Image (cartoon, rainbow, N blue to C red; front, top):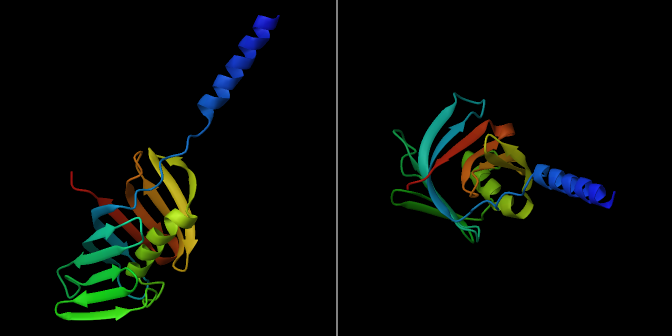
Length: 167
């Protein structure tokens, strides 16, 4: 009787431990990636642009746009301050200078908020899902099994940012 009880207890422990959803690694915020930004502010036609983003776990970020139009080589750098550069022109401002509905500010807000307030929501399609809320709206971040960010989305802004990394 004792052996049966121990076997049943062991079975249930293994069953429940095996079914429990494991925590993913924390999102990696030290990276350089190419980004594809899809943004629809509903005030004009949807926008698509590409660029490169560099981020550090200390909260420093740089976003450089690459485009066929006037946005080409526009650069945003968040550190102690926000520096916006275009060609020979440069403007240094407070970090929150851009409106929260700006796609660049929304990307910064999400990456800044994620390690501080982001909440793990579960797994979908082999990606870990994290969510949170910033001044730019509710966001969702997808990471792969190593914690590498694959996508950011902000529902209120119709913003989706897809990340690709050089091998």
